[in-house]
Amino acid sequence: MEWFASGMRRDVCLLLYGEERKVQKLKTALGRRYDRRVRPKQFDGAIRALEEAGHVERRTEGIADVLALTERGERGSRRSTSSSANGSPAQASSSFAMVLRSTSLVPSYISLSFASR
Image (tube, rainbow, N blue to C red; front, side, top):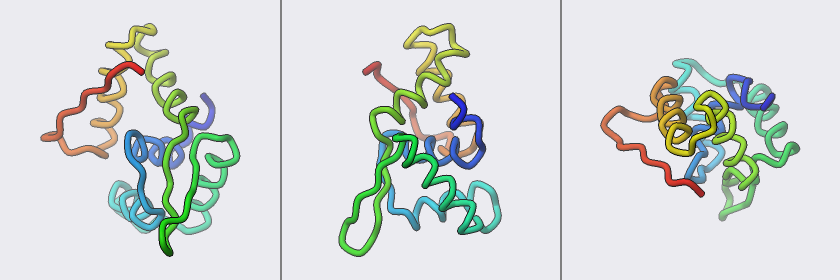
């Protein structure tokens, strides 16, 4: 999928996969990943594009905005890795875990296991 090829949009989806995050915490996590400050316009543009495409949804919790992948966003994330894993759910899960590890978004001591949905 085209949106997953973008670095920041890809990383946002990886960070949101399986959990929701407050916008500011997500932005901080991206900044740590890139080892630099994330420009607000770039971040807001990536989030807006993902929302408009129906991959990410926003809700308000108290005074903070919270982002989560929609079902479509989760399917797209899995599909983009399964195409390189010949379509097998087990291989796709393994491939997705490799993507997470390779982008340093998940510490190596955390076990990654994705069940087919």
